[in-house]
Image (cartoon, rainbow, N blue to C red):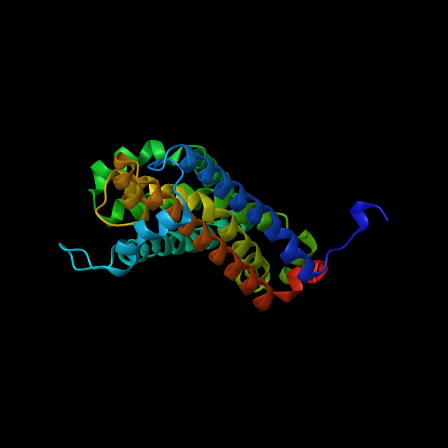
Length: 271
């Protein structure tokens, strides 16, 4: 049987997907052990025991100034910013994407503007946002929204614009207005695509969040990583990066599960 025709069972997918991660972990441990054998105080590749020791204070000991457990305070602050930014971007993508995709006059008017905003590197706008909005939470959330919303808008608009024309004609034949066509025809079919667009935007959203926190913040996962890097504290940086990756993976899995449960008809070919 050709490889393109081989199907992998769910249990086998878990095992096969875990193998590369396990190999990378083992490779890291081997390289770290080699470096520590040559230099016991090496800080570039800390051993797991060193990372556990370095993280214990952040995990379990309250900070003397704030009284908070810094690791959990950083996590909560970053997730709040990410959630608000992703929520605003998703709502904007749904509303604007539906309008652009379904109404040609609006698409002709606003389409070029959305395209122009989408191709601007969001990081280049960071100084402008900090000057205009200050160094508070608004600028950080705005960077996430500006970074991912235009791309999501274009994706939803393209998906809605590609809906079969026969559906639009049949709805009009039954007397549906433009608003009813948008709500009853386009919206249900756009929702699975919206969740897919959210999954694709998770990575860029984390990039913009970490960038904003690194420049102007006093709490957050990105802030902590860039704070301790001056001390070469890889025993803190590596666990923080791994934690960010785990949070992103869990969010992606949650969105995928939600899409399958809410819109099983959109995943019929993959079930």
